Length: 292
Image (cartoon, rainbow, N blue to C red):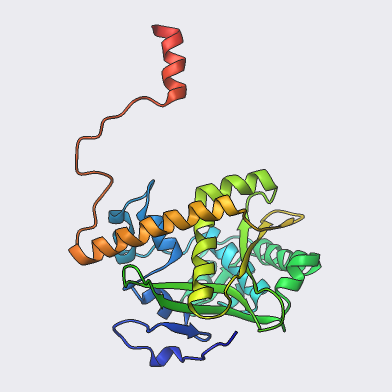
């Protein structure tokens, strides 16, 4: 496995060329609108639609407290990301606290209350105590935030992925971990989250990235899922073959949609026709018994 170090600053303005970029800034990665990411691909498909995908590209969402906690935990676990800025005020609605939060945002840092700062520190400690998660993210075992760009052979569009952690070359199978914070790390709850957020699509997408970049022919991909409440339990998940096949099929559909929309300049909504609907099955059964 080899990594070609390409400086982000040298990437062409029209779009980033295929390759592996260990030092590409997050802002530069997301600014490449001509390439399709895993999260973008999922946004093109139901229950979303291409119009929403395009709107969100044109109107990026501001940071929220939920994202702040997740990003802060990522920074501590991976060792890279925005600085954490402790805004140590009892209340955040005072002029002084608001000014400090604004200063932190302007500096590109993540402002955190004392309880939140302690929370993410405890989350990182729990990762370090977990026998598998600690090994997957061991500081000397790889490097964080590695970007990959490649061309889809079928459609010619450029695809991109950004690995949370890319292990250094070594003997044995390449195992790529991805860190997720969640409400519950209980396996059945994670199965529902995988379906809701399309993590099986991300699984296939990132394996494809590793293969396209020549990092491995048959990489493994695992999710390190951690609860955001004490005791910050951790579950490491690898998806089965059926989930990966479905993820691959959904990705292929999304790639085709993206290629078609890019070519035509048309980014449709849910439907341009009159949509014929029925009640949900459970509602129909309930009301049939009561009223019919």
